[in-house]
Length: 395
Image 1 (cartoon, helix red, strand yellow):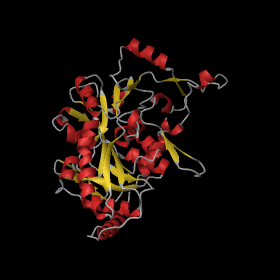
Image 2 (cartoon, helix red, strand yellow):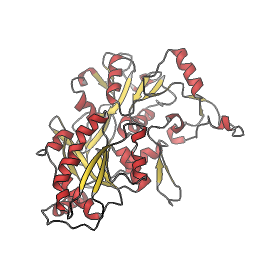
Image 3 (cartoon, helix red, strand yellow):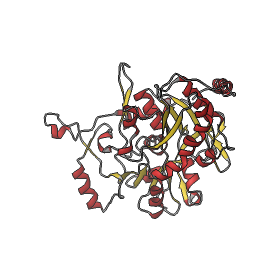
Image 4 (cartoon, helix red, strand yellow):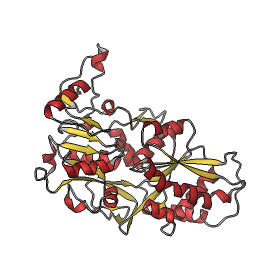
């Protein structure tokens, strides 16, 4: 996290840059910049929420300042495999990306896309640059009181790259003696369909959910009172008290990252414009944000990605790294604690059927994921394909 003194100096510098300036003459031959974006929800929700910031606000505040004028177009990304932003980045079809910190942490390491700004969310009259993870069950479910009660239960998480809806919760439960891979009856990845997770918790289809805390407060305020929040905390983040209950430590809010190929004058102009956005702008109101601020460090997010085995970094530092694709078969991304090996999909499916456990439509689910055992010999490639990598810190 950037120290407050440094952050104040950066704000001052950005404020100077944001002062009214004459028309900018750019040497770039590119006239249209593509701004990708993702939030939880359908493609239509993503577009309706984020496109005004790009196609109205940035075109008005930035586009006309250049000679010749430039324009910004919005593209909805990351809602399924076909729209995965890695492909657009590799093919040179994206210039900016608005997303959650786990995603931005990946493209920073993998493609050299540094963070440009971090948003401050505006929820129920409170503003915050942080995001927590909330672990919740129904108050009416008296079988679940403590973390020890999570064993042999069905637990739903968010995106595999989500620090708040997966990684922090995984680590917290692990610290309390509950491993999501070895101790649960079923682990369900809901991807970007957070609403279905909440509905499944409320209907009893699953026992416990993990979500981003501010998202839950924004989208289900009427349901909060019916949930039992596990490990509830009030945390001070960057000299401010986080305005909501959280079960986990905090990470930065959503933000914007930028391609290293975008000219410096365009980067600066976009950063200046976003730093000037506030609640007087309808585009900010549409996004439920109060403002943007200078970018916050992703070091903790990157460490979590690496610890979970989702980000591979070269040992000698000769290259950046590579994150898993968020929509691939997640079975092969899961790292085993020492003394466990992964079971085949056929064995898992058979045992889940015997237990009467089903998987929600369109989700990836794992039950009876691991079994105790030693590493398999690698003489037989078919056997080796079923072996998990040993990873002591995930135990």
